[in-house]
Amino acid sequence: MTHRDRWDLARLIHPFAPSDFFQKHFESELLHVPREDRSYYDSLLSMEDIDRCLTTLHLSSPAVHMVNAAKPELANEDYCYPSGLIDAARLYQEYEDGGTIVLNQLEGSLPSLMMLCRSMEAEFSSRFQCNIYVTPKDAQGLKTHYDTHCVLVLQIAGTKRWVTYDAPVERPLRGQDFTPDKYTPGEKSYEFTLQPGDMVYVPRGLMHDAISTDEDSCHITLGVLPNTWSDLLLESVARVALEDPELRRSLPVGFASQGFDRGDARGRFADLMKRVAEQVDFDGALDHFAEDLVSTRHALLYGQMQQIHRLPELSIDDRAGARPSILFHLTKDDERVKVSAYGGTISLPAHAAESLEYALNHDEYRIGDIPGELDDPGKLVLIRKLVREGLVEVL
Figure (cartoon, one colour):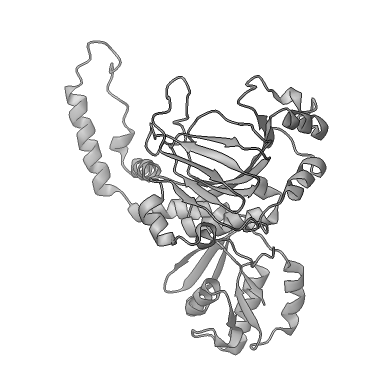
């Protein structure tokens, strides 16, 4: 897989359309996509990739851990050295005995999964993570549960039987974890078997089981880690409190006493809510989350050495394009245009804005055809700058 072999939502859920997914399924309803193509996800992950990671990368717990629904007493000491490093020999012994191997956030080790996450992050404006589950035949890693984040499950190898039930907590927050003594599964809602190349989207809160069949199973769990409206509301109130001293007053003296009369305090609370509504800065709060997402996505600059070597001979007839799935935040005023990406900021004169936006928003173009006020030498200067910053590449 090359870094331009892009996996986006349309490709993951094909033949379903992303517009239908967001309208009917996202955060609401399961979507099962069966396929008759066992090799559909071959460019993303293979069992050989997993074995190489487990046996050569010196991974540690909890980045790698094991779960076994039939053996709840399974502990790190059963497959780790005292240092926490994975003992691959004992890990595979526990696997042979029915344990599921879980590799958390493997996108940090495999470029194909990192590019998958980055592509989805650019599309959703949410953080993503890749967890891998490798289960021996006729085994179950986790007992019936729900997740506090939505997942897209990509079946890589083997088969797994899925059963879903109800959603006792609709769209749970990250702190509303599943507890088995509190929630029990209701009636079955779906039952199906994932084959290699198949996909299922499971909204957060939906209780489910996943049990391997008569062959070993491997799947990618692509987790969506969004900011919610509650996050935005909390951020908005916090920003108002920095400007309004009335919100910074202490709670009423004696409010915890048994005989405290809450009438006045209740009225005061209602008044403060009105003050917040009148002063809240929606755009400022939303920009906070946009900038936080963009600034924490580090650069994926495959082939950057070759890119730098090509810059001295660059001409307006060469073709360039934005790095696949880059995340950036652009602001401009009458004097400057600024691009935030990879934790840094580039500032250019305002007359470069149109050319800059075009260069960052198109996958391929002839450098001389970039629109805007820049002349040909100016376009070359712009592209060289963007290549050096890792935002654009020469094709």
